[in-house]
Image (cartoon, rainbow, N blue to C red):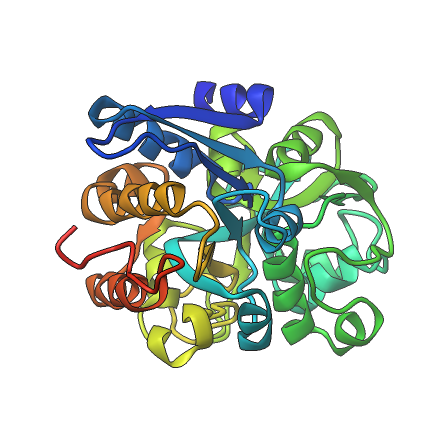
Length: 349
């Protein structure tokens, strides 16, 4: 709880990390989804350090914009960029951890795991078609749960957000109406509801508003003690959000087949799979304007891959599989170069 209160209060990560090389100012901006683990990684890594790394938790849309415009050393997004956009801006994309987006509710008498939802019903709630918690569609999914006649208060992101992309991608797969009327991107025209900035803002608003429902990365729900719903997955099983269900969704992903490792893990098959699972991604330039800073950023993420797995699991993220990490390091070594064409990362790092 204290971790996320601190993050929400500062909204900017400042960590000191050391290197025996030239000091470089490393800056990053983007997704709020991975912010808790980036903070923990930096806190642990600064003990080995001497360089300032600033990560601004400003949402995926803004992170993409800043790295495209070379305003930061690295950008961060939960929505993977397509090959054409990576090529257009000269970017390398790689995943760092896997997590889950969850429906969080504030309903009288409903505790975490009590409520079951499915994709079509969730879409109808966020379309504004289901307006009260005792609607017949919700009672049908929850025959043994006493649901109040309380109005539903929808809460959504107000900023450009990869978490929104994950959520709306899932709803687009579940509902033809959602797909045609709203669609899926980092920022959409919401039919109903109140907007809040960042995962931390949505979590705070859900906690404050009676009858609320919102969507957040699981760590924010857990640390704000929000009630999360189960979801009926592709195999028809009602599953709870856990590190095991996130791992189950990622198990069969073909990471290297997707440009920039841009696998989308929503609505994956498997009886134990969480339907709104996603990796989160980092973006760096193939030819950085500040090669010293870019090299330091890669050293940081290389350390996180090698030593940060336990910290990730403690915050309910899934570390990337070893074979994916190996493939990412090869991409770093072959594609990220200085102005003279020399790689800035060696596989022996």
